[in-house]
Amino acid sequence: MDKLQIKELLNGQKFRLTSERESLLDVFASSSSMLTPSQLYELADKHDINIGLTTVYRLLEVLTKVGVATPFLVDGTIFYAYCGCEHHHHFVCLSCHRVMDIQGSCPSFDVPDNFRVSSHRSDLYGTCSDCQTANDAGCTH
Amino acid sequence: MDKLQIKELLNGQKFRLTSERESLLDVFASSSSMLTPSQLYELADKHDINIGLTTVYRLLEVLTKVGVATPFLVDGTIFYAYCGCEHHHHFVCLSCHRVMDIQGSCPSFDVPDNFRVSSHRSDLYGTCSDCQTANDAGCTH
DNA sequence: TCAATATAGAAAATGATTTTCAATATTTCC
DNA sequence: GGAAATATTGAAAATCATTTTCTATATTGA
Ligand SMILES: [Mn+2]
Ligand SMILES: [Mn+2]
Ligand SMILES: [Zn+2]
Ligand SMILES: [Zn+2]
Image 1 (cartoon, rainbow over the protein chains, first blue to last red):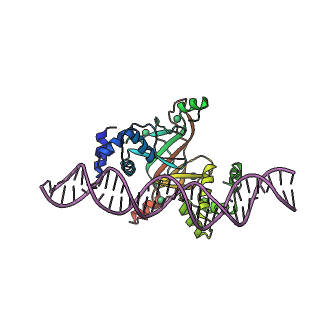
Image 2: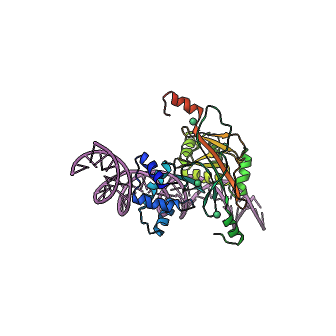
Image 3: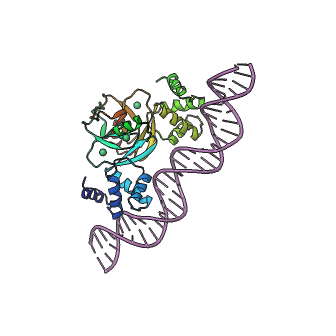
């Protein structure tokens, strides 16, 4: 997904893509894992991008509002992953917290006619191949 | 779902179904809405069941652990609904917060062979019929 | 250029959740 | 039955995540 597109999306809701947000977004989008706000803050730090934690919260908030970030609830904790705008489904590795896009058409369920379905989520949870071999080797990382 | 079954499930993990938990469970299971811990606490109060908020948190924790309660993340807030053990899918009304079971077979996605899928969630979000007619009538409740 | 609007970030406030702990209840085993 | 071990309760305190506040700064738009 293009950064210009994201800027347009944000501007459409009177949000701005500042240099701070752009740097953070780069870090966020390049991570294949779902992250807590604090984890994103730490990760940015490692890239020598020193942004206030409040700003991290605000970025995740606006990205979620425009649909570019997706929140995941895992084991009582809320994580965020950069997922772009096109609707798709996910596999979440409960071991390494990586989030992978998966192929497949949207599920269809029997919903009463008079219900309006505005969105849906279909997420799979489990262990990715890397983490399985790691576990096989006796490593709990 | 039988209360005895729930007791067995809890006992299986060395949890006990005390009288406090049983009263709370009655209130919880009879609600068709997803609830925050505080909301369940208030609801119990209305039924003249006065249980500490800490106990409410602990009940939801153990019920989630044994799979009888399901957490929902909606708009940044974590709610819980009594859902029993048999796997199924849900429609969540974003207006009244009721959670309805929906029919349909589990979706199938293309997941790499070497991934282990341990669980999945398929949730629909929208507006139930009651809330649509309420909105039509100009009521924002 | 000037006014209006949005953001950054530190500090403080808030609020939700967890921990602690003493009392009580339940289970286990002799 | 009756310890001893284990689990629970709930109030209070502590902790932790998130939001609010506020001032300086930046951006947008007439
Ligand atoms: Mn994705
Ligand atoms: Mn259900
Ligand atoms: Zn993994
Ligand atoms: Zn409704």
